[in-house]
Length: 103
Image 1 (cartoon, rainbow, N blue to C red):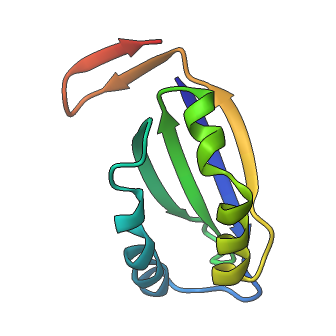
Image 2 (cartoon, rainbow, N blue to C red):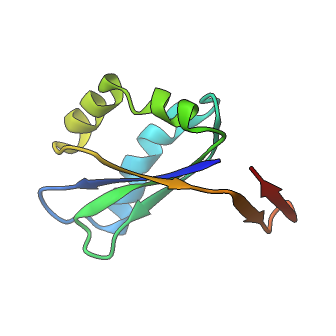
């Protein structure tokens, strides 16, 4: 499994309520994405940085998401260049399902 952290630096701070309103507009697009296990939207305490934490079945699945089209969408929506950090996730503990999953 792969975890990716995306971050976008906005031109001005936004409130939590503003972030929630923005995130609601894009959340449905992540339903049914091949290989995506979970996405968590994040708002940094500075209010200027937003992004997501994604858990993927494989790096190939994640790479399919972060295409030129996705980068163009981010630039259009947030007026900034997206950053993606890649992390290997060999074991995941899920307290909701009470499962430990190994890659």
